[in-house]
Amino acid sequence: MNNKSWATQRTKKTTIGPMSSERARDQLQLQVDTAVEHGAEILVDGGAQKSRDGFFFKPMLLGNLKPDNPMYDAEFFGPVGQIHIAKDTEDAIKIANDTQYGLAGAVYSKDLDEAKRVADQMITGQIFLNQPSNGYPELPFGGVKSSGYGREMSDQALYEFANKKMIAKG
Image (cartoon, rainbow, N blue to C red; front, side, top):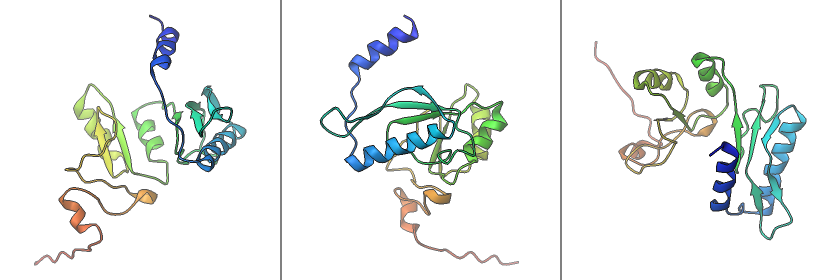
């Protein structure tokens, strides 16, 4: 089965609900339009579906977002994916860290030691190896940079707003 027939077959079985509000849908479309006006390419077309009842947004995929694009590190709160092509592992780490945000990331590799090496260099509150980011109540949840401070969930949540002092005796 070729990719196009797989995608067509998959689309017939996949559903996606509407956005939370008209404002959310229209804001997402504005972000996409801004990204495209500044050089991003639409790799998979979609967007606001104003002809339907509800606030639907057909999933999209953008590429060629450069650092000078105002949407380069914007959070698209909706079904808009971005593809960034890295020259090598070090470039991928640079791209991943070149953002004001840092909630979660994922590293996929057949070489677990290499995945851990990459994860250690990523500036984010959570890293998932060979799985998408997820929330587990037994694990701490939280980001860095503009994605938050402290941790929720797990026993670490008890210290979410605590500043603990350490005193070392010499």
